[in-house]
Image 1 (tube, rainbow, N blue to C red):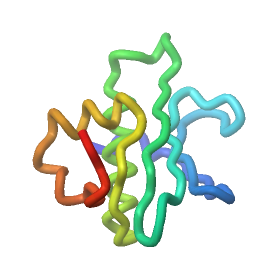
Image 2 (cartoon, rainbow, N blue to C red):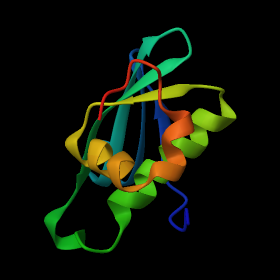
Image 3 (spheres, rainbow, N blue to C red):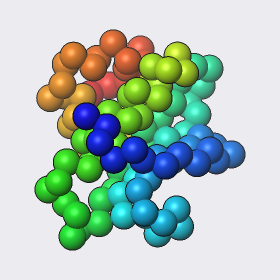
Length: 101
């Protein structure tokens, strides 16, 4: 489903997948390192004029694919990511033991 081919930047605390400009992205998901082999999905944002196009869902799936590739587990913090995992039980194996939904 990753139709957008989001860009990725690594930061000191984690990273971000985004589309558009990296300073003022059209859509992005930010994550931080939350422990050994664990990342925290901290925030997901899509510009209002692009909402309803499935970008937030694509961003979450992009983050899940990244976590799988890097052998990481996810703690959802962002309310959108929490809701995504509540609705999509098939992705629960990627959740960290510390995750609560």
